[in-house]
Image (tube, rainbow, N blue to C red; front, side, top):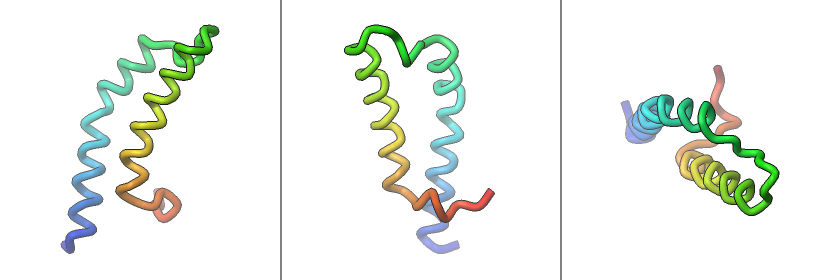
Length: 64
């Protein structure tokens, strides 16, 4: 495959490797807590993770 296919494959493998950690996070951490400062911090963490993958591909072109 070409370089872009290899990059997408690598990114998908990295994302799949995060599954256990992501499951653990959502099983043990309440993101939408009443405390605004904590809630904003947790949402910022999630946005930063999404931003990492947004730079790798155009989500609108992924067909499932």
